[in-house]
Image (cartoon, rainbow, N blue to C red; front, top):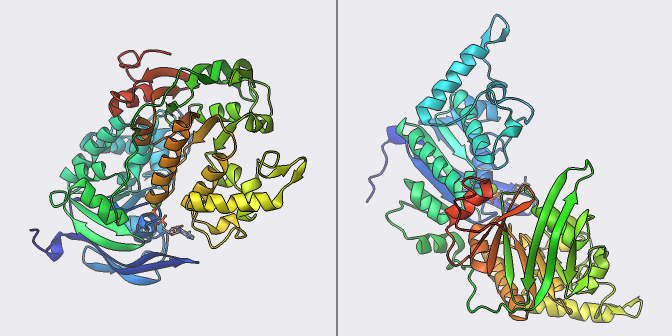
Length: 517
Ligand SMILES: Nc1ncnc2c1ncn2[C@@H]1O[C@H](COP(=O)(O)OP(=O)(O)O)[C@@H](O)[C@H]1O
Ligand SMILES: [Mg+2]
């Protein structure tokens, strides 16, 4: 058993924190005690209230109720500047560096040592080098931030916070943007920071990470703390159950349904952006009926452009795309849909739904020319409404009715509506871009089940995802995209996440087990 912490051991204590937003209670009577010199993980599902709680601690949001004590003294932070003055620093989920400035400039911006009115860059550089050496944070002061990979940008952010004198570090989902090797490196840094006496608040929803790096774990569910445990006291499944209130679903394919009938054939596809730069080059693959091809990659390496090109949203500069043997390279999005391409878009708000339109009208969106929504050239309103009822039932879309506007549904229910709409009709191929991103675990399990059903029904599925576990679990075959090219192929049954990580970052590309494609 843990002994109760002495006052002197406690870096931060939050008592009875409540924060309401219109329509939601983001934090409800949260208590949290953080011991000095520990890594304390906060875990919880998407929307559980983790970021809100951290923003309150960092002075970005004011709590409606509750108190914060830092080093035994009651604190009220009216701004991040006040939190920084109290030794608290935060690295946000989305980085906030200026791309066109150097690492050195970014670190010192707003906190410069001055000398006769000017910036003393020599002193600043010396301090950065000292921070870098003390905590094993590899950074190159003179590089431009825009040239850096994600892992190094994150180190710069951490460096910046330390430069301002933080002794308590909040990292909001720092691993969400990292590949496995970078995660290991970050965890090494966290251990070094802890060894130097710093206190770290580490936010995540990935349980294996939390169990690997945390000294204590606080679980938040629907805005309330449900448990505070040490990694020795719990197993991953127990933690999952605390987090979601039930066991976590896992992505997995059972028997293979892959056939030898090619459905989606892409050959030597290239796409250039308006400036004439190649955003996709030499992309070739074939997806057979009943097969899921997963595309892994660090975001921004051409995934979005590939999906757009396949859906006819973005012009193809060379190469061909064929669906069931018919060339659709120059076809419109509508005729691709009519030919059987189903599409789950990455951004369901911009591309998937009209948020201000009703659910049944969203059912028709993009499908106004195909049965059952169409009758000749006319919209068959009755049939469309009836089919919407069917989708709501079969896909478990939680809604008071089909006349409700789409914006009233939670993210998971919006996504189930899209999946239901796309899986109807006579689809032969499915392009799924991040189908479970940002949805709750219940909806995630449902969407995975529908994708398996699509595959069993003989659809050719292209799955683009940033979630490696989902990719490995749901794919029959995996390809890695890097700088607009498919650079490696892997068998999901045998691939290690580290191998994917190497291929995704271009490190040791030749050493990978995957052959070139
Ligand atoms: N600025 C805001 N305005 C309104 N609602 C918000 C705001 N920030 C967060 N929320 C809501 O508060 C809840 C908790 O969100 P958040 O703290 O971001 O969760 P987490 O970081 O655990 O994913 C969610 O329902 C979210 O939609
Ligand atoms: Mg968050």
